[in-house]
Image 1 (cartoon, one colour):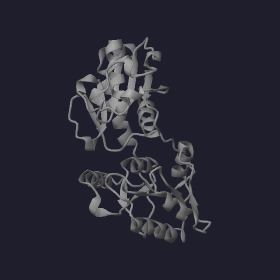
Image 2: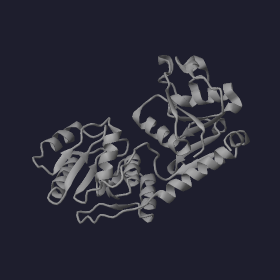
Image 3: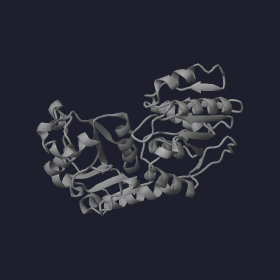
Image 4: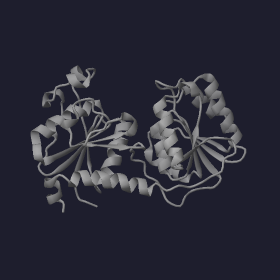
Length: 313
């Protein structure tokens, strides 16, 4: 692997950290994380009104760039910081932003974004699966164990009471045959988590340590199959990355946006996932080819920059 110096910048939120670390690990064996501190007067402003200046951040001056560096940013608060650092350190920085930066794409050497963002520029690489930093363990899969991963309300899905009752009933049904690890998310309704905790069945284990990505990775590695509520492309991507069969759990179908349906069609065509039904048959997949192709595309973009190619040849 190339020995690029890689620095990630973000506000430090778990979702953003997962994406930047996932991308950083594709590029280099090591990287540094830098948590930005945007001054309070700018926190509620749209991106275009945040100054492209050191003044906007209370700690950006602490970041020193003295050699060729891959700078990876993610999140609204990091956009202007990346642009500022690129202007300040010029040829020493190859800056990559994850997701649509919502400003002129020419400010970045590379943008890595989900396919559903529909960014079609020369410096954009689109990904089918969401990038993440979840680490998996080999050879610990248990044929009697499954994972049921639950999201929560967002701008598309309401997680109505009927939905929550359906999830509870399906978990109870599955526990007749499998040990079920129930993995809620930060968005999962508190009432649903409480009801899950009341299930008096040794085959149902509700995972409550939501801030432990290592344990999350171990659970995904252990599960012989993954059932994931279909409200989160990120959660579905993480489940698929475990290379155990992934089953999409439908609910509130009338609210499902077209871009989600398009994503589902693609991952099903690739045999990365299937729709859930109660007659589950475990299967395995490999995403090595997908990951290798993505890595090659990103490294080719970096190496096409003459100054970075020459310093890491």
